[in-house]
Every structure is written in C-alpha cells, then in structure tokens.
Image 1 (tube, rainbow, N blue to C red):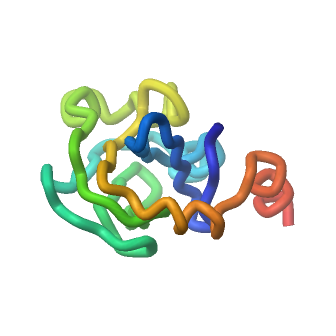
Image 2 (cartoon, rainbow, N blue to C red; image 1 turned 135 degrees about the horizontal axis):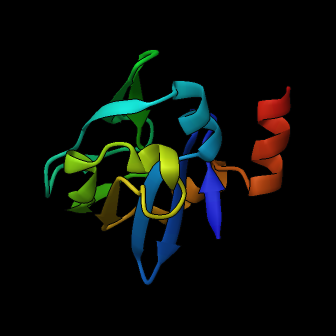
Length: 121
C-alpha cells in the first residue's frame, strides 16, 4: 500500500525496504520532466530532508524524503529517461529505495483517499 506526503512524494514499504517516488498529481503539475537529481547510494536521510530534485520545462522542485532511512538503490533508468516520471510516476518512475527505515515516520503520511482529498483542497 502506498502512503503519501503533503509534499507529493509516495512511499511503499515491502520487507523493510521503502520505494520512493512522486505522485501522479505532482508529475502532471511539473509538466515534461527533463532532469532528476538523484541521491547517492548509502546516503542517510531523516523524514523531511531534501533527497534530490526534479527539473521540468515548467519548474524545478525539491524532493523531500517522506521517511527516514538509507539509500540502497536508485532508479538508473531515470538518468537516461527522465520522462518515465511523467509516463509512470507511481510505477516504473520510482526514484529510489531506502533500507534501515524509520517505520514510525509512516504514521505521519496519508492514504491515497486522504491524499486525493488534500490535493482537491
């Protein structure tokens, strides 16, 4: 199950590994993504830390880590094909994966229904 942050990132935890990305709403708002600044492997982040940025034809936006953890994998496909973020923001366009996560951070995030209500406000 995906959980969402008010800063428009999503997280999905499976077997202690958290996959992070941006929501479809955020990808649509950004427009055509041209570049993604990725975090480094083994870099550690706390919830709310900036872990990268996304540049599009419209704007540049920071990416905020929804939960704490250590980067264990990045989506290298995005380096060659940043448009994947537009085409498949919540599937193939995932950005990175975290290990050693702080699961207590998950309680501050929203379900899909709560997130959709939030973006409609």
